[in-house]
Image 1: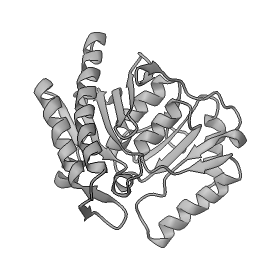
Image 2: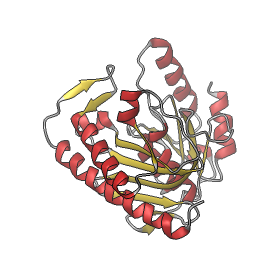
Image 3: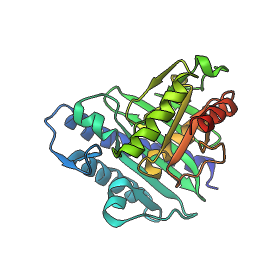
Length: 270
């Protein structure tokens, strides 16, 4: 494992990269969008590509020997295999549909895995200027101030976040909505904000108590947020209750107190 001082240097470099990309997002956010369709719901923009270039160029200047996995490069070149090498996993613009509609839940997500363990996380929403950061063993922060998960112990008083997903075939939509229907009887309310990374950060800072999503884009959606949740005292796991696998496209997160009840509710909702 890398030394403590090099981890804080990795974080500082990632924050710089996120802020550079954030400036591009902020500029594009208020302009008319030129949208390429990647399926009917999953919208990709020129901004996405520009942001990934900026982030990777910045990180590669500093760490030329590290590995890199990004949403855009993976989309272009096929899947990337996660190795034990230090690997930067980047979503240059999470919440692309929000971006296209001018809905202010968009972010840059940058995660660093070392020996496949998420170790450094940065999630930056440049529209409302919120910077979430975390380093393994060193806590989680929002704009430099420490954050903690909620202390909610009752499912019925919990705020749940999930996403509808990008597939719109009837069977997928039915499974998704039936599950939500079942869960709505067990929690206080539901939010769908359109960004997996920001949902994880919502858990980390106590705005949300519960979150799950299946079938999201890939490890770039969760690599940064997973570190931040863990460092804020929360738990990230598979919706089945098993250990979280960063490559599985399945994630659940909550505070410490709600995991067992949440997993049970998720199983009953299947």
